[in-house]
Length: 269
Image 1 (cartoon, helix red, strand yellow):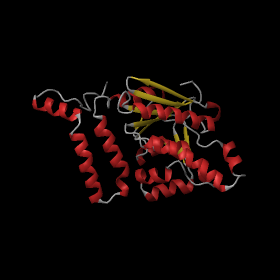
Image 2 (image 1 turned 90 degrees about the horizontal axis):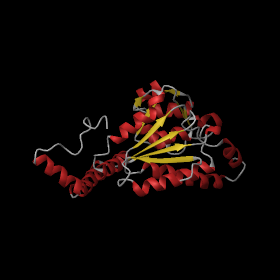
Image 3 (image 1 turned 180 degrees about the horizontal axis):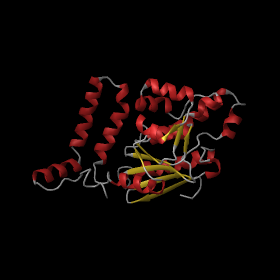
Image 4 (image 1 turned 180 degrees about the vertical axis):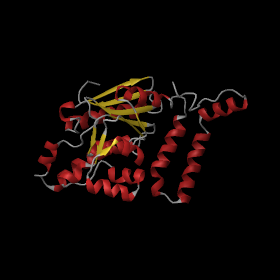
C-alpha cells in the first residue's frame, strides 16, 4: 500500500501497522481512518494464512493521540445524528481489529490518548516503553470514552477502576498500567518493535485455528452463561479436533517427536 497515513509491512508472517500522522501525534484523521481500513482489509485476507500475528504502533514518538480535534470541533456544530453515524463507521474499524482471529499486539511509545488508548485496549497484548502514557482524555472535553473503551477497560481492570479512570481522565504511567494489567511488558524504547516482533513470532508454529477459536470465545466470555460457553467450547473443539494441525500434532506426540508448538522453545525465534 502507499506510504501514507498508515503503513503496513509484513515480514515472516508478522504484520506491522504503523500510524504515520506525526504532525498531530497520530490523531485519527479521516485519512488515517481510511488507510487503517485498507490495512485491516489486507490483514483480514491473510490472517491465519500468511499472517499469524499483527502489531499496531505509531510513528514519530507517539502511539495515537485519539480523535482529530478539528473533526471534533466541526462535528459539534452539526446534528447529533451525523456524529453518531460517523462514529459508528469508525467503530466498525475497532470491531474488525478486535475480532481478528490472530494475536494482536500494541507497541506503545509516547501518548496513547482518547481513542488511541481505546485502540491499545483492543489489542490482545500491550508492550510499552517507560515513555508511554495512557489517558481516557474524553472527560477533559466533556465527551464519553468511545472506540470500545467502555467495553474493554472494565474487563481488564475491573468496573470500579474503569469508572475511576474514565471519570477522572487522569494520566496513567507505564508502571501503573503494568500493575493494572493494561500493559503486558515494559521494554526499552529502542527495542520496542524488536521485542514485540519476537513475541509475535512465537505464535508462528501454533495452530491458527485453535488460537482464532480460543480468542473469539474469550472475547465473548463475559456475556455468556456457563452452559452457552460450554456449548461453544464443544463446537469449537470439534472444529479444532478435525484440523490437519491437530492430526499432525497427535501423530508427533505418539511417535515421541518434538511438538509442533512449544512456547518456551520458540522464545528466541
